[in-house]
Image (cartoon, rainbow, N blue to C red; front, side):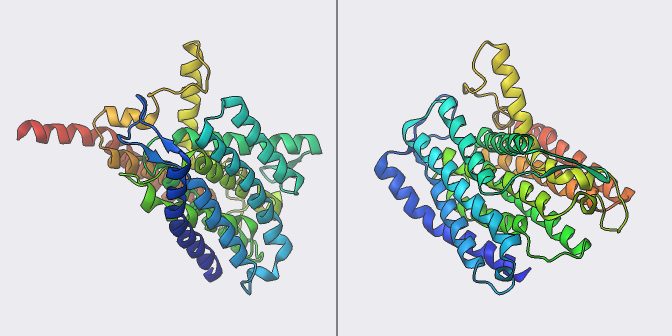
Length: 375
């Protein structure tokens, strides 16, 4: 665990330091978010948070290769991490080009697919789909399709939710911590070595996301841009894929208590990115339906995302972001706890927290308005 904390700290510190350099370069090269009708920022803001986070991830990886415990497990840890670093560099480069020149949707999609193909070519891919006490083996073509599909979908979901200062980075940081907890718990329960590629990736990802937040939280001094949002979505998806290669399906189907808790632990490596990012995935689906019904491209921008609606019903910028953090944390950690720990207590706790989160979303603006009216 201590070495994972070192990895986390290195990613956080390097990302924080590189962000200032990246912000200066973005201003010099004109990679600046102009103020548009659908945006919520009031002044032009530089991009290039992605290269700073990529630098943090690379630094964490290099440090990890020299740590005593992790370095003894080269194949189990660094094979997948190396593939993710290379693929992450590809998708980050695509995002940088988009931040500079505004690529069309098809070109950006092609870059995402290319990054997915790179990690597949380097050996990171689904070998099977976990099922309850069983698994569905995949042939090579099916493996490539499922792997690239998860990567592209997750990268786009994070990109879609990146509409408020600090929103995407914070939500993925929460998801990365939850995924790390799940991966590490699985290793403990199954008596496996604690050196896991997915744990290394999510520790570094959480550090990189938290390292960029002081620059990116409201009022943001810089945006992570498409280079950042696609990168962190990519790494989160690849962490899930890496985990399924670390454990057999039968191990994934056991809870912390040692028995077969439910089908959820077996399915969680596949669906945890969707669970963690349930808010942006719902937002993505609603946006596609909304735009296609209006006869527009599903990639055409608008100002009807969930975070825009939170602002419309009376939440401040900061509170809207914090509420979406709360929803992300509720779903991410709730999914992990319910899947690993059987018992009615975890389900009741999840239900209570859900009610409190929903109440905060809908009740706080009304209470605040009553206070203002009364004054």
